[in-house]
Length: 137
Image 1 (cartoon, rainbow, N blue to C red):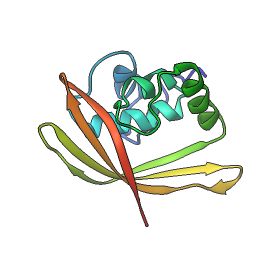
Image 2: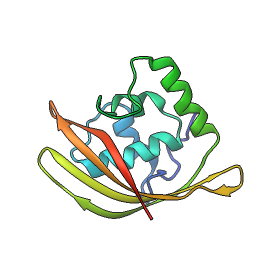
Image 3: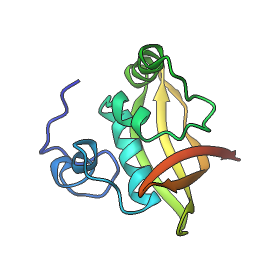
Image 4: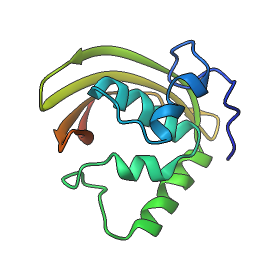
């Protein structure tokens, strides 16, 4: 999927995609877990499976060395989901471990698939990675 760089960024920043999350998708490292979380949401919205894989910690339950099937699963999810908004609820910024609580407003098969999650991130070798998350009611 080709996402127009002048469109508003899916993360909700009110900036153009090219001036927001695209810089991370193109290789700039996020400086904190909040930037990583928002850029991962945008990566799902614009079908950047490679970015999701590259920013997932090896302790994550979805992590696998079978990258082709992992990528296919991510792309299947992306293609069957409408990404309608992201709301940041809380951000606990740590030096090596951080937490972001967010609400992802999604739709699948004309059904609301919105969820709220508290995500955990670890910084390893200067790079933030998504480890896991807990759904919040």
